[in-house]
Length: 166
Image 1 (tube, rainbow, N blue to C red):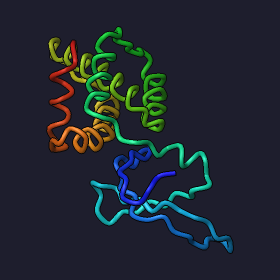
Image 2 (spheres, rainbow, N blue to C red):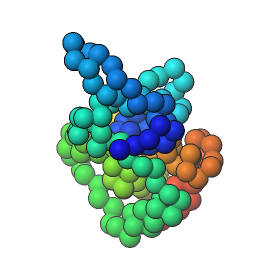
Image 3 (cartoon, helix red, strand yellow):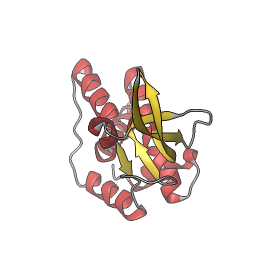
């Protein structure tokens, strides 16, 4: 069980601080909830029922600096996995975004960085949908990496790009 004051990564919400654990009545039933406050979205609140295993499983401890750098190194050792079919690629990238698996997000970001760079050498650009998927993946990584690495959110993409081998 998580404790009040802990900072966690929660699904697509990103980095959240556990503000309290309280009982609430919803639809005539009392239940205990984690009250999460997203770090980078003031005014937002997320309520996670403590007994809902699926939702609680989306709460994960933050990575460490070592884990972040290790994941980047692992991703660098893999072959680029470009999916030629745009609809298939979109479906796979949406799956990765919904899973919020940081390892898969890094692999996706690396693939899109490489693809964008290759296209730029030919005077072309990434498709709009691919650019949007890249921004969405970067956003999820930016939140957590900025907190863990102690850098600004806007500095995270450069941090990743500087360590990605193309």
